[in-house]
Length: 421
Image (tube, rainbow, N blue to C red; front, side, top):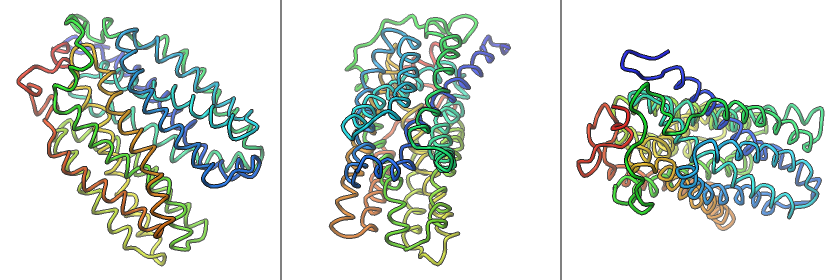
């Protein structure tokens, strides 16, 4: 069904739903490793450092792939990159269950990071291009919150329940199947940018800009640095939380699981809610407020003792909500709305890649070093510092939300809004 101005809302709905399901499976296949690690480590004889290397390898590969796959998607087309990537990470999940040693599993998870990074950058572009400008933030919220819902909320529950009746290898086999089905739907649904979701003039007619032209808009380099800060918070909190709650606060496992679940539930609401709010209040103020609120909530979480598990849950929930909210804005609409003609996926991939490599790959290693040298609480100070520094970068952003800014930086009309006019 199309609106009166010719916008194809039926395609918008189908594209956003399909991309959200695909990205949700990315999260499931990526994060289900975490609750399976104890079983994997026992079978393969891995220590903590070796187990964490599986997480870091995927994050670094994800970041590198996001940069290059986004540009490849702009040149070859969305489906040409998106569909093979979904098929590949689904098959690699199956292959993960066949690994017999650390080396083979490390290689498989790194290759999975490559394919999933391609889905991330291309998926942002597909979602943005399918969305009406006034719903761009909300739709990106649906797209991005799916990774938190499936990866951080559903995956731990699914994995622990399946481990009661089967092995970790069979869990990997099972979670790889849905992606093969979704890949078929993506091929059938997703349109290329020239086959646009408007009835008439959404086709991109401007010549493709050069890769380096992305840096002419302040939001691209600033978003790279700000997203690094946001991901520093997310990955340090996610990686260290179980150890902090059990090893530092001495919570029993049942209470640890309850408190840790706040990360997933807060992430889902934050990515959807904050991105939707940014359509109305603007990208810049929403990002600034998210970093401020996340820092405050994380500080109070660090001051809460083991005798207050409910308060631990509440403060961690809000810290995650706003941290994921800032991440979602910086990884989605901000680079997309600042992208030069024909480089939407490239811009998203560049920003996501920088955040993943350093925030997702390097920060957890630094946090582990702080925990070993000082205490587990010192590792959380790194996450808190990331939120505080993120405020500085967020202040430097230019406003690009269609409701708040008719023009992008330097007085040029945003390419996405020009073709949607």
